[in-house]
Image 1 (cartoon, rainbow, N blue to C red):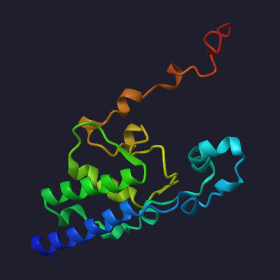
Image 2: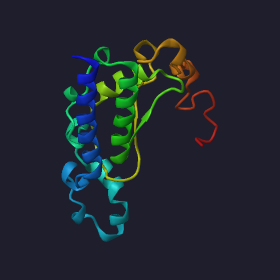
Image 3: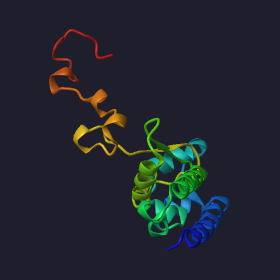
Image 4: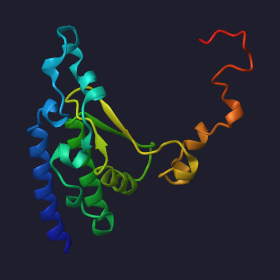
Length: 174
């Protein structure tokens, strides 16, 4: 596919993404949550109840944009990757979804990881803030290049963590 053809496709995809961001679905419908059944005193916290009790759906379902719509990074120029990544973030933000990447991580890696994440499930609450993390803080499974990996900062030996306070049984728990 030529760069011009890809640019035309990306413009169409961007229009679909922006349309999706302008026409957000009802979070109760998407998450299959019955807000009306909440007691009156919990209704101001419906988004939190929806997050806890709602049904998770694929991000592609929630946004209405299939994962396959996002071209593989090797088919895009650096400028196209940056543009598309920014549009993906903008779309997610409209749905109250946010990404958490290490500072300075190259946009090509962010795009690849976000494209993969599009198949993951999340609960759409319609408000608040849901943050997508891409690392589970296990160094051997870290998706980031070593210079961006912060897993080692959280790598504790089992004996370093005294969760049951066995080192000092007299101590208060908090």
